[in-house]
View 1 (cartoon, rainbow, N blue to C red):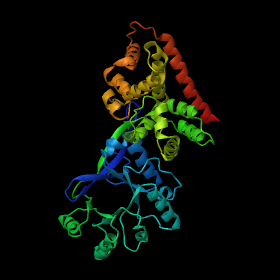
View 2: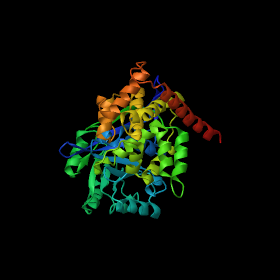
View 3: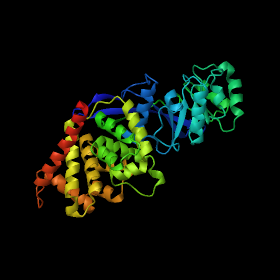
View 4: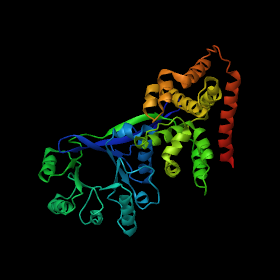
Length: 406
């Protein structure tokens, strides 16, 4: 998932994005692709790790709206996801699930795909080859992708005729590299097109702090209990700033259906829902990220705790002040402007105003903390609150070390 460590200890994460066009040349969807580094021209792997990494990057590092701008996203799935061994952490609204050509079709796979369709997910058959066994999925598929570069074109009449028996199937002509291949797509009335002749994949890259593996383990454990303790789960997430931001970005993917915007970790957790939080946490366990440095965690946690400590001085909610500290602190580490950070999350207006304008009660909290961190002590003596914040943050990190040693 990462290939470069920046000088400040952050990591660069990537996702490939190749447009899918309609017959008029308009971009209607993107296929999201695994990319291990910014200049990779191919995925290099199509396993469960690659699928998990694409999901985590797209939904919780960039944010799905940033990646797709409201368009559909085609995501390759391996057998583990199709049969339900690993649950999908997102809803069906904006995704198309691609069944890789390497997946062996058996009764368990068919049952799993049928269950996904019943849950509202759309299915695409990737690199379809007649006779591979995947044709039994036509009744469940919304898209069939045909390789016009290396595919067997001698049976194209037969394949297209079979697809046309199912009115819900759209054909995606893929790997289009020449005008002749574009002409074939036109001749057969293939609804969607993808390939180098139209657009090369673009690799999106963003700096990221990685959630602590220990925190992810602790979160999975807490979520796995018979009666999960919401406050404990919120506490675990809040104590790891990168994990908090991932949950916020995940909440952004479901925020379109909500009139409320979030102003705290607790609200984000409630919006995403514990089942989805559990699924995201399990996906993160498949991820192969290095941990963020303790120094980075200490800086952000101390800032967030200090905001929380002085919130009542300004009549601001403590949980919202903590979140403001997390978002602004991580933004400083990643060199992202407050406006840039605010755009990534479904934040309450008061929190957006505090981050971008320094206005309102939360804005006064942030301004006071900024002044103290810059040595401009002004009218408020924050020394006691700051030392409490340092002690609290240090204890949080110590708890992670003790968990590791247990």
